[in-house]
Every structure is written in structure tokens, then in C-alpha cells.
Length: 366
Image (cartoon, rainbow, N blue to C red):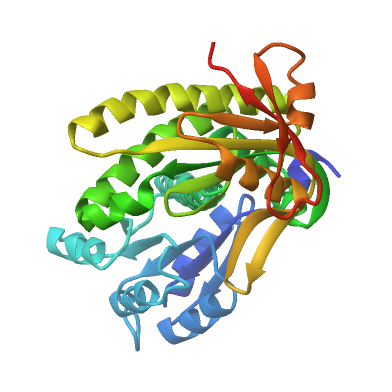
């Protein structure tokens, strides 16, 4: 089979009640196009409904339904309204031509038909129709891509509830469900909260409390994002962050401690402003490293991304022991700092829920 034989011919439907005109047009077109004919409007509408042609040559003056009514019905039907219609008429009055174009025809050719002109007009309108169809397909494809982009942004916004933007973007490019399934992973957990917050809420109104919390979370959030931390939860005046999940990172303990140090430096700046407003608030931070079970936790319609294990409890207890401005870490965290930060041991630290004293260290900002 040649290439030309493999390309399907376009179809032309000729509707006219003058047999001689139909024969002449069919003879001129049949070598290039597949030609179907009808001698009245009713027959044409039924045939076109069953098998839609690429273009319709339609006589205006016919017995029964005239060409104008046939065109109106074609354009009123969602399945046929986009088929190009070219009127063939013995009339040449401008108002008749305008009438045909107004109801949806693309052209108006007067009889006797000039075959070369007819062929040229058909080629032009078929090319235009093909271009329009391709443009519509392109628009549909573009709309689909836009819809997919909007959905991706919405998913990204949801993931950003838990992860840094960089990590959320990584999850969107892969199988996010894999990361949400429960699994064991060694992580570094950071707890932080404000000292003096209960007394603060008793002394100030809700507007002042919300303003202070927004300032606090905004400043800490910028630092968390900068260090690619994963926010597990907010606890009123504090939060839990962990590292090395869902994406493994090098030196998670060092990154967590550096983040905590930067947080305390930033907190000192905030505190100066708060003191001018009469607020007496400080922040304590606790950091621990160990294995935890991680994944989506919750119920139908409401899930959070969380971590469960003794490492979480240890970080929370260390945070509870930390004084305002202090960063305490576990022995596992200190061992993975490799001497890059000053860590002073705290001997015999007894924490609730732990049977034996815990080996802990205070991190210095210097």
C-alpha cells in the first residue's frame, strides 16, 4: 500500500434536488474525495446524523425542507454544528448570501458552478476546518494541562502542611502514597515551646496572644523551611519538627541542632520587641535521635503525618527541661555532631517516663 492509499479520503455530502447538478459535482469530486448525495433535506439530515461528512454542499431551493432550514437544523445539533456548510444557489442577490452566512454557512457559490472555483473553495474550507479542529484539540490539551497544574498546586499546598516546599515538590514527582504508609525510620526529633506562655495568656487578651503566636510561628517557620525540616504538629505555643524523613538527608542531627541554634538567635531578636510590649516569653528546645514509626495517622477524611516512638517522648521531655533560651539534646544527637558544636554534658538528668537518668547535653550558641 502506498502512502497516498493509506491516507483516508475526506468526505463531501452533496444535497441538491437537481440531478444534473449532483452528477456534475460528483464527477468532479470523486477522484479526490468520497462523495455522498441526497436530493432532499429530510434524507440528508438523516444520513448526516448517521455518518458525519467533512463538508456539506447544500442547495438552497429544494422541495420540502429548503437549504436554509436544513442548515439551521444542522447548526442547532451539537453533533453536526461544526461541519462546514457551503450553499449552492442559482440566486445571486446579496441579501440571500447574507442570509446563508448568518445562519452558519461558511460560503455561498452561485450556479452554474465553476468546477475549478468549487474545488478551490472546498480545499480552503477543509483546511480551515482541520486547523480549527486542531486548535480546539490544542485548547483542550492546554485546559487539561492547566487543570493538572492546578491539581498539582493543590496537592503541593496540602503536602506543605507537613513538609518543606523542596521535599513536597519531590514527593509530588514520585509516589507520595509510599511515603505516607507506616514504616520504621531513624529520625532526629525537635520539640520547642515557649516559657511563661500560660501566664501570658492570663494577662493579655486573645488579640495580643494571637499576634504574638503569629510572630513566633512566622519566624520559626522561615527557619524550619530553610533547614528542610518536617513539621509534625503544632501544640499551641510550640511545635514538633523532625529530620531524615520523608527524604533521607546527610547529617540530620547536625542540621537539627544548627536549626535550633538559629531559632534561639532569632528568638532573642523577637524577645527584645516583646519586652518593649511587656511580654515575658522565652523558648526552650529539646532534640533527640532514634528510631520511630512514621506515616499517616488519623481517620477517614482527616489524616496527619506523624511519628511515634520513644525518641519522640525523649525530645519532648528534654524540651520540658530546657530553660528559656536553652537547647538540650540527647547523647545520640551529641555523638553525631562530631565536635562541630560545643555540647556541655548534663549529668544525672531524670526525665518522667524514663527509668534511668538520661545522658543529655546543652548546646552552646558560640
